[in-house]
Length: 164
Image (cartoon, rainbow, N blue to C red; front, side):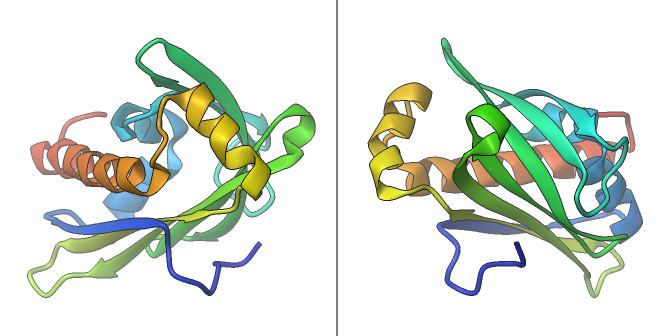
């Protein structure tokens, strides 16, 4: 799926004092992404071994005592510039959930402007079920807060120059 054309359900941006390639490396390394993403517990490749269009990974998520897994298909990879994936739920990913996208742009100070966005792909009948399963009834507000926290964690990891 290409980037949706409508407005994102949730989004946020931050400037990181690191080169776009360094930011991209953290975002496309599943362990790195899982270490900074708020609801992510772990991620592993199911099909493929790296971020490439069509590669599939499983995301294991948590919110307090609630846990769930999703199937994610990489849709866009542009080294140092963009990383995006579709999220689906259920056997073989039969229920569309979301489209996530990270855009990286050089900042005037030599750092990177990172924009994270999420589009809701859930069918209307699934919205209430998803809220019960995840404990997040207002996904727009929840993901806006999660994006802010995730970008903050990304900034800390990269500006400290340490491993994630």
